[in-house]
Image (cartoon, rainbow, N blue to C red):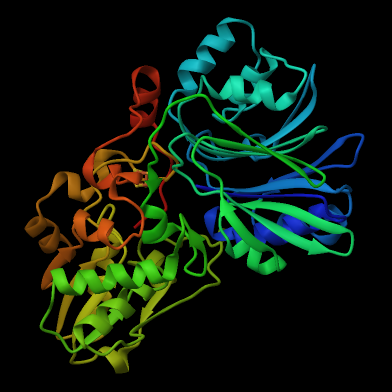
Length: 467
Ligand code: SF4
């Protein structure tokens, strides 16, 4: 999963992108990069780590221009090395191009093998580079036309930003798996246009959210001039419902719904579907917070911050020897014993992936003196991998694909366990039910993955951070 942000028409564009990426840091912490167009050349800075680490002021100062874009990466395709950090910049017969991508292409490997057989030389193992090679093979006077031709060949999930001498281009794939919105930023020299994965990035800059790009829409901005195009590929909308469950920030508006409000509705629906005889409702922070509020209000059970999270555990944390049991979870989460002791607890989390983290958290609650632990999950059982850009592991590692509900309850050692239903999840979202992707719960993949690409995805799923 990744965060992308771009701006056209503002002095210090790179500084604005830096702030936008800062707000989107939750979408990827592995690497980050920014490119800017100064009217003559594209400048690129990128590196491994968080936005604040990679971009001290002197690095940002090297990126001049009124047009810039950037990326924060958590790899779902390609390995975790700086060569795969985005933006990717190339020089073509149409001029320099820089690109950033949120999502995952489902036919990238098939396309790559074909392109390599035809003589293309790839710089990275990232799926995104395929788009640039397809563009280089289909040059057009208007670069946006070359991009649209290239996109008729790629399949899967992609929200893109592309920087060129002709303007800043934003794209959402025909299914609209990943979010991408545009905003206007008023300034002393006129209106600038911003694009970002989530609206929280616009809030930080004081930009006004205008709208999401439509699935299959391409928007070109050059100065204050905007033009909209369509990718000529049929596709029914399949917006990723997991963005609402877990990924997006609660202060963002995604797919037209405020994320925190949706999470409260998920929690309320869960309380109706799976009540529990208990004394308190406790969230697993942070992603369970809003669902727990909804559960508490609907059930009438008091909400308690019965668990705290250490927000300062960074990527540089080195796990000590195995002999210190459960250290990995304990360093992030700790129960508030005075609130837990002797209580029957409804513990709210957003999902169970492998089950090992849930088991540790339930164990922590018991060690803290909970009389009973009733685990409630604000999404359905995750039983299928995501091929569209979320880093779920292979099916054999997903506990809900391998065990029954009772077997999972026994594994995590909860007194009871219940998940939200798929119907309950979709009823909590404001859009038409069929417009959301639910494949990781239902196995209903809108874009199938086949051949080499499927074998690759099954053999080498992205390293997952999900519990
Ligand atoms: S499979 Fe799940 S995580 Fe992936 S896009 Fe669909 S809903 Fe989102």
